[in-house]
Structure formats: C-alpha cells, structure tokens
Length: 145
Image (tube, rainbow, N blue to C red; front, side, top):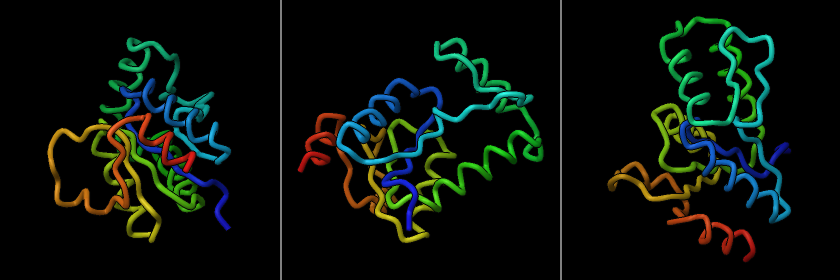
C-alpha cells in the first residue's frame, strides 16, 4: 500500500511554487512526499536555506558534482524509494530535466500523473499526464472535488 497520496516533483529553483502546491495537497487532507522537505544534514552537498541566493548556490554545487558522489547517490535512492511508495505523481512546472525523468519513471510504474503550471510549449510526451492544471487554483478546485 502506498505511503503517500502524492509524490511532488519539480526543480529547486521553483521552490516557492512547489511549497504552495505541497501546502494545497496537504490542506485537502492528502499526504505527500516532497523533496523540498528533505534534510541533508552532514551532507557534503547540502541543500540549505530558502532564499534564491541559497538555492542557487546549492544547485550550482550539485550540478558540478560527480554522478557517483555519495550525496548524489543518496538523494537519488531516497527520492526513488519515495516515488515508488506514492500513489500519484505531481509535477510542478516549470521543472527541470530530472523532474521530467521522474515523471517518466512514475508513468512507467503505472501511477496516475498530474502536472500543475504552464508548460513552456506543447510536448507530445506530456500525454503521460492524466490531467494538467494551468495553475494552483485549478489544482485546489480538483482536490476539493
């Protein structure tokens, strides 16, 4: 049985919008896993702070790290386990390449996939999403319904 109703994915640089989506999901009475709540204490590549400057510094450090870096491997393992344990997948746009890969993984696992936000352009593979919400208000209305 899934641990959470939703696995919420996105990009660190979109943290504020992701937080709003996470709060809306929980306010609807559903549970969610979201990477922005992970603690990376004692990690060589910590994700610290909530300001745009802190987030950017964390992202720049991560983006130049080796794919085999222990912190990168731990984040991957933790996130993939949580994705397996969730009932649904929710992508917050705009999202980066990694979050889009997570969407493909969720679809391949047979999960219901949703997205919220405006895509930059039409993508044929966005047909993996059962529903795409144009904004947070539309998602909240769906969660209430």
